[in-house]
Amino acid sequence: MSRYRGVKDIPEEEYVAPGSALCAGCGAEIIARHMLKVLGRDTIMVNVPGCYAISTLFPYTAVKVPYVFAVFGSGAAVAQGIRDGLDILREKRGVNNDRVNYKVVVYVGDGAAYDIGFQSTSAAIHRNLDFYFVCYDNEAYGNTGFQLSGATPYASMTSTSPPLGDSVGNEYGKKDIFEIWRAHRAPYVATISVSHVTDMLNKFEKAKEFRGPKLFVALSICPTGWGASQEDTVRIARLAVETGMWPLKEAVYGEVKHTFIPRRLKPVEEYLKTQRRFRHLFKPVRRDEEISRIQREVEEYWRRVWEKELNR
Image 1 (cartoon, rainbow, N blue to C red):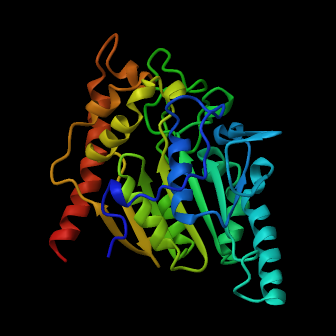
Image 2 (cartoon, rainbow, N blue to C red; image 1 turned 120 degrees about the vertical axis):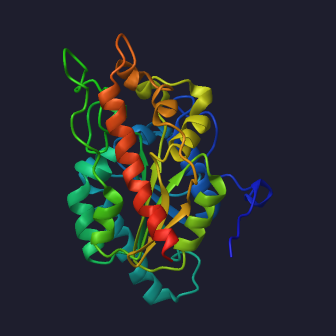
C-alpha cells in the first residue's frame, strides 16, 4: 500500500529552509526537501564537497537537522563512525531513547557517488552499514565547472568533453550505479525523480523497513551546467522519465521492479533539446547518427522491460 497517493498526502513539515546559496532551479534542493519530509527530524545528514555543500556555509545553514561535513571521498566512512557511535549509545541507553534513534544519510553528488567516494561506499555496503545513501545526480562535477564524471551520459558536452571537430562530446557511456549497488547485494536500491514526487516519497518510506545500506539515485537537473531554464526543472525531469532515459525502479534484495512503465516512449530529442549540453547534436548540423544511437539504446532497454512484464 502506498502511503503517499497525491499532493495532499505530502507532509507539511519543512526541514530545508529557503534562501540558501544554491542555484535557482537546483534539483538537489528539491530532493533534499522531500527526503527529509519522510525521514524526519531524527536524521543526521553527512555531506561532502559538491553542489549541496553551499546550502550550509558556516555560520549559516539551510538544513534543520544535524549536519556533518566530510572530505570528498569519505562520506560513507564518516557515516560508519556516526552509526557505530549511535549503536553503542543505544546499547547503553536503550532502544527507545530518542537521542540515539537517528537515521544516517549520506547526501552527495555523482562525483562522490560514482567516482571519488565509491571506494569507501563499497566498503560500507560490504559491511552492511545501516544507512541511506542518496545521490543527486546532475551528471557532471557541477560545483567546480561542470567537468566530466562517471555519470555523464553519452554525447553530453562538459567543460572537459567539448564537442570540438568530429568529437561528439562525452564518448563514454554513463556508469550504471544502480546495478553496481545491486551487485553488492544491498537490501534496497531505487531511482527517483523530482517529477514524480509521490513515487519518491513512497520509496523513502518503504526503505525504512530495511536494515542495511539503501541507495537512492535521483536525476538532479542542473540549470547552470545543463544550460536549461531554471523554471523548467520539473518539466525536464518528467521528459527524462517519459522518453525512457531515466527509468523509475527499485530493487528489493536484488529483485527489480519498475515503478513507472511508459507504454509509449516520447522521442529522446524532446528531452535533449531542452539543454545546451546537447545543442551540438542539432546545430549547426543535425547529428542523426548520435541521436539515433541514444534512441536505440533507450528502446532496447525498454523492450527488455516490456517483455519481462508480459511474461509475468
